[in-house]
Length: 341
Image 1: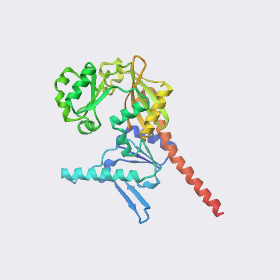
Image 2: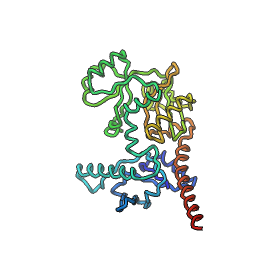
Image 3: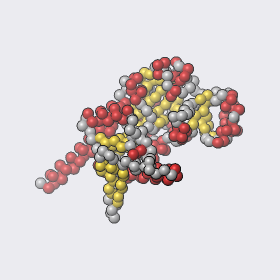
Image 4: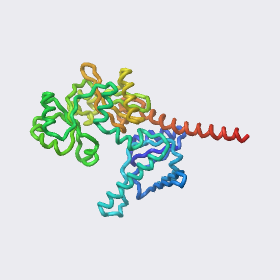
């Protein structure tokens, strides 16, 4: 049995679920946003530590111990019942429910894509990503993560003002998106005039890296799918391709050098992940520079523009876990039958 944990309007998940069901897989879908108002989760232990874990949704009753693999895609956070109107109580309920769900996921023996939530949260830490990428042999940009204005000004001078800034973590998007987007931006003279504001929250500053193209490298297990993003052909995407100008930004498959592909797989594995979306720069001089890894990054637009079979690879990964469990279970039953005979 496979469980896909995602929101109700996730078209990417629908495509992969369709591929899995076409193969005969037993797939269920759960959105934590339905918990606890429309879904329930119970976890029990007897005196010997044997567990029961049950998820009830409007569609099904699921024995979570029978789940072979979970795909954590794009879940909504838990939400209190609409009848609870006190804001503090609603926040308390949401926090407790999120903690309970993560606790439940961690008790299960199944494989997870990209990983269990606590591993995903660790993999999102930008400084840890850079340290590991450098240790694996990637070139990285000179970087400063700080709340000290003097350190920022010194870094800015050291790189002759050719510096970009970006958020230190995902909190900005959680609190302000979609009303406000925060992209990688060149630090302007006006920004320098407001250097003192750096003290209010950590910010990442990096030396600007000249680009020939940018690369989105999607790793599924040990399979690597690299796509070129020709971000320099459009003014809108020059400093951050996530501003999306797809009509003027060609996307093509890219043949990574074997050593770079190997490092991408190692990076994902060392972070404890089975999936990762890695952003690289290919410089005019032909150097590959690591920027960051998103442990649950989007991929559908890459697939649609390049025909790279990423959703098939995800379906393969999940289906292999289910079929392996079925084969092992069948082998155990056969062995027991032979013993009894």
